[in-house]
Length: 288
Image (cartoon, rainbow, N blue to C red):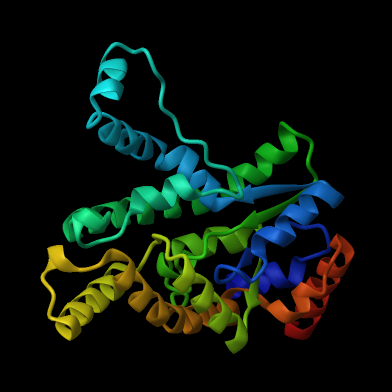
């Protein structure tokens, strides 16, 4: 464990700020919402911050671009007769994922791969900035709203925007300086369930660019398809299964070098704030 993380571990006491990390579906938002509702913790959603602060304009501009293709809506927009906005919530991030899009055949809702990469880069910058806002929001929560406790609900792609093996990684250094980093570790069954859920309803998401370019090239080579002929949903289904395996060791490296680990199975049994905080206490003791 790096020195920065050791300091956070040594000084941690129950009630201090926590940042929960883990793949989609392991329970990050559930436990953060539970703490907000039942124990008055401030819930900082990184995905919500990305969508409402750093990518809101791009999301809304995309809505307007689509609306301009419809004569009625075009006229109303040009005369300032209608207002278009994004309605992102903690539980509904569809406007953000829709903006990210899927590469491939435009007749099936796909976008050009270069446009897809450009939007992915926007997300990377937005996620980095949103993560770096964590410390400021801890102070805002206390000074403005009177919250004594704080939990950061991080994006499932945090492992893509940090280097867990770098003891001076700026995002992890800042995060561990203000929060105890808690990795929620899923098992093989969680991974299989996540893949099955994604297969039924594939949704756009953020990928590390090197990984993305690699799976895009591999998929096109395997299928022999031109860029404009790729079925967007088929591609992201194919890539997502590989993404799970790609992310697991990166999350584990964050936990090993920067924080503590609790199992998703144990978290499933935590039905109240006390049970969750007891799991964190145990993880801290085990690591110490």
